[in-house]
Length: 169
Image (cartoon, rainbow, N blue to C red; front, side):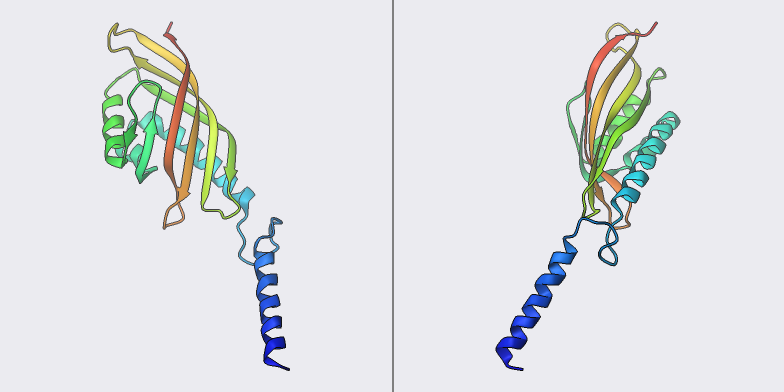
C-alpha cells in the first residue's frame, strides 16, 4: 500500500469518526451524553432547589451558583459573583414574610451535556420596604447552567422578571 493511499484511508477513517461523534441519535457513539436523562436530573435538581428555599439557608442557596454567576431579580440591581449572591440571600432571608417557589416549564440540555437552560414560573411573597405590607408576585425566569468539575449543575446566569406585584390578602 502506498503512503498516499494509507494517508487517504487514515484521513477517511478520521472523518468518519468525527461524523459519528456528531450524531444526534442517543447511543450512537459509546460514551455519548443521554440528554433526556440529564434534562430529567436538572428538572429534579431545580424542583429540589425550590423546596430548599423554605429552609432560608443563604449558604445552601449560594452553593447552586458558579463562582462567577450573575443573578438578576425583579426588584434589585443585578448581582455578580457567588459572594454577592450569598449576601443577597442573607439579606432577603431576614424578611419573615419572604417565600419563593418555582418550577421549570422547559429544560434544554445541549448535546454536549455541559450546558443547559431552564425556563419557568415563580411565586414570591415578601414585605414591602416602604409600606411594610406583605406583598406577593408572580413572574418568569430563565436560568443558564454549566456542569461543574464534579459533574454537578451550577447556575451561571439566573434572570427573573416579575409579571405582577400586589398586596397579600
